[in-house]
Structure formats: C-alpha cells, structure tokens
Length: 262
Ligand code: PEP
Ligand code: MN
Image (cartoon, rainbow, N blue to C red; front, side, top):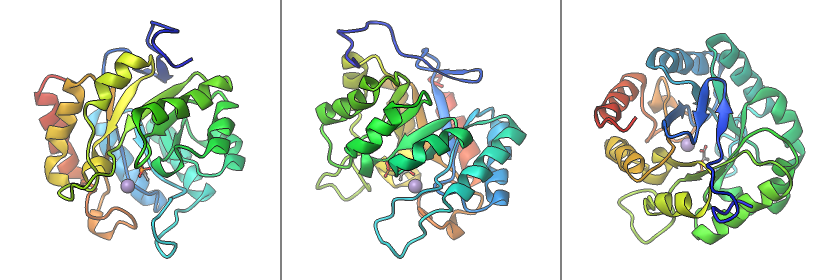
C-alpha cells in the first residue's frame, strides 16, 4: 500500500495550514523532552517568532538507562496541548505503549513511533487503528525494506497518514552518534508515496554540523527536517549535548534558509 507502484500521487499530511509532502519543506523543532510548562512555553514562543508551525516534545522517553529521566508521561502531553493551543502550534510526541495510542490522540496532533519501536508490531497496529497522523522513525539498525514494511503495518490497518523519518543508523563510525543515511531520502521518495523527513539531531548528535546536514537532507528531496531546541540545553534532562539553544536555533534556521531550500 505504501509503494509508489500502487499509488503515484504523494500522500499529504495536513496539520492546520501546514501541508507536509506538498513540495514546500517543513521545519519541525522542539525539545527532546517535555520537562515543564515554562520550558515548553519558552520554546513555543521562539518557534512562533520564527514562523515554525509544528513543535515536537517527548513525554514518554525510551532511554538507554532505566535510571535516566523517563519523561513526564501523560502530564507531558497535557503541557504540550496547553502550550500548543496558546501559540497555535501543532504537536508531535512519541508514544511507546499500544494502550496509550487512543488517549494520545486527545492531546497531540502527530504520534511519533521511535526508532527503538519501529518493529514493535503491536504498537504499529494500534497506530494503524486510529486516524491521527504518525511519524515513524527508522530503527537503529533497520534496512530501508524493514522501514517500509513497518509503515505498511500502519497503513494496512487503515491509517494512511504516515510520514517516514530517517534518524541515522548504527555503523562503525564514531564521529557522529549515528550515521545519517542521506541516500535513504531519495530511495524512500522513489519507492513510497509517503512524506520523508530527516532528524538531524539524533542522526548526527553534533550541534556543529546540523545546518549542513539539514541542507543536504532538503537537497536530497526531504519533505522536512526535525531538530531539537531547548531554552537551556546544559540543564536538559535528555540529550543535553546536542540540543540547540534558542539563539542557536535562529542561526541554524537562517543558515538553512540561506540555501533557498526551505
Ligand atoms: C526522539 O525523537 O525523541 C527520539 C527518542 O529519537 P529516536 O527514536 O530516533 O532515537
Ligand atoms: Mn533527543
């Protein structure tokens, strides 16, 4: 169902006045984790000022260590909803439990399925049973074929509103947190009719190369870029090393826009 051979027209995801997949790329930004109302509000104000319409923020955090911050849970989704309605933004947040999918639809506009859950088939099925758009992340060590099949799980249940996001794959290279597989972008665009985005924060794990990687993603045909922004990254409860602060985010955006690709 997700194959370009089955359907030639691009799938479009409408979030308010923003249409993802239409040929006008979108920038999605926000904190790694929702930490407090005030933290999300500061980011939302900066996004609004920059003309960004879609905000991300994790409430259920799949952390490598059980001792690390696990997210605010439903409380975090409520904060996202409250702040988003104040600023007129659309929201994306990760859900990790199939039994939370329906509840999540009340609070957020896009359900994110994280890299670690790309082949959590019960979660994919639950996301396929609702009509809320889904942002599906590529697994840490998933092939493109496995990624496409994971999307097929969702669409085959009836939810056609699926976007794919390349977030880097695990290789032997240690200079970046993951290896951004830029070639996945044109391949996924050719092989599927779904919008394809690139998460520059988790693929690189390096603030100093976010802008060139975002430009590369857009040049390769990505429908959007996702980046993490935090009012005070040094104190962030997750991904402290790679989130942009607000002035850095404005510089990043200006840099990407200068390319004429965004
Ligand atoms: C995230 O986007 O918050 C996240 C945890 O990313 P990933 O699933 O790609 O590691
Ligand atoms: Mn993160």
